[in-house]
Image 1 (cartoon, rainbow, N blue to C red):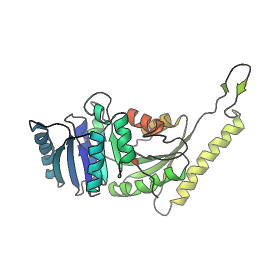
Image 2 (cartoon, helix red, strand yellow):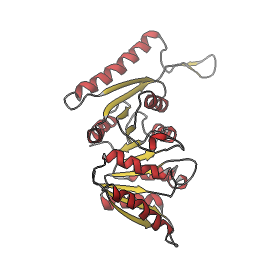
Image 3 (cartoon, helix red, strand yellow):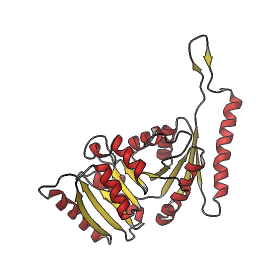
Image 4 (cartoon, rainbow, N blue to C red):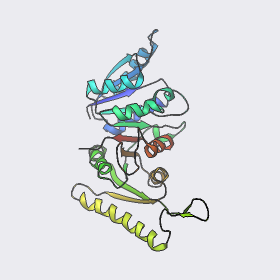
Length: 282
């Protein structure tokens, strides 16, 4: 990982990206571009970025600091393209700071157009994990598509760099009947014990198949869940002590629709765990 772009807004939560960068690079040398997008007529934002740059310099990184005017999403994507960045780190937070930058359409624009992986962090006030973030367990949620499975290959270099274990996670919903207008009945699937057992068996067989496919490269952990995808991802991350969630941004089968998509959007909004979004490998 050679070049990382780190937009900052001056809030302590955004500065949590500092520890995220340390964890992902395993304190190995990297070029860090600190970025503020907006007006800086009094020079205060440049001064602020240079203060943060000194912290990176002290740890052996090569930081540069730059304030740029313009539309945040456009500037961020263009900077990533020009620098051929390897990673972009953004804070996602509904409460303050970058909320006007990266929530809603801005996030969608960046996710759709960004040529490199996007790491979204959602640090919560008082969350001690961000004081000294360590990445010991990476989880890759899957939707059964080949496109989503390429996230495993994208996750491998990160796992190897930081010495983390890597798990794949897959969920299937609980099947329930849906009633239209009585007495008509609209079935979304059988709720028989036999059908449910088949779903369960197919889910485990799918995960076992992936583990077999990658066994010569690493031992994949397997996490099988039941329930809605976004809820299942967050519950799995909490129950299995996951430190980083890595997902593709254009998987089929409901993982992503337009922009970030319903599942990824829900995960990044509610998870205190960093979420990395990558494009499917061709």
